Length: 188
Image (cartoon, rainbow, N blue to C red; front, side):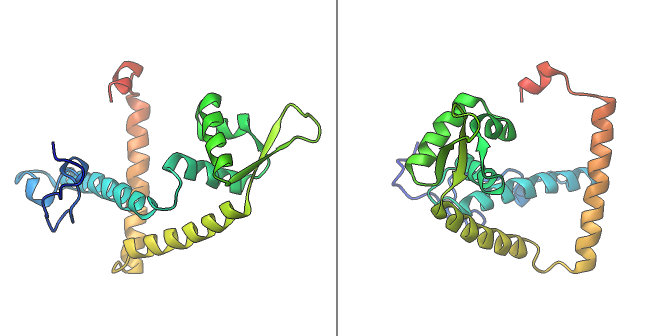
């Protein structure tokens, strides 16, 4: 294994991305004989992975881990949530929310204030610092999405969107007919 300070192989397609972080299904790895449908689904999967990597790389320097950034967005959109309500919205355990909120409070991103009617409950509010970071992040997100679709005509974009909506309906229909068993979904 390479030492973290050693440079990775420079591959223009991956721009120095470590081999274990490279997206799958690079153009040179695709099988020669596959149906159009299969190739399209693989391309959608590749786009999803590339999007995930590119989007995360955009925000890696903002000081917030992805889970905290997601929590901060919920807190900003719904100020005054209780810890339990936040945990429910994020689909995480309350103990996980406790640790996350302690870190966010220590970093100056949230304030906790007692509930006016029930002093046992703390309400969570974003700080001015959090609001500034969120506004900057929103600008970056808007620019990122604009860049993602640059070069695609409005007509092509509308066609792509309606096609993806139809594919979503098709996939949901398949899942209704053949629900994934709990044993199989745990293995993934």
